[in-house]
Length: 78
Image (tube, rainbow, N blue to C red; front, side):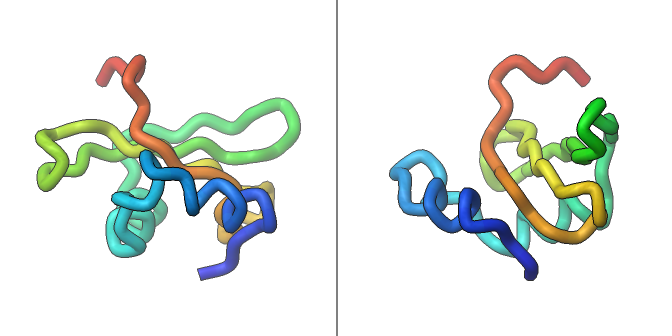
């Protein structure tokens, strides 16, 4: 899994430590929604059943494979 330095730095936060690599890969490969930002970064969301159906947002760089940020998106509306 290719990641940015920012991702590695934020991964140590308590709220991010619980996010499993397999959940990240799931969102990347099976997004329920995708949005491309004006800077080319790609936002993808998918529901994670193991986390009571919460939606995980994964932000990728414009290359579509490098992970920049991940977090459970409290404001996401399916």
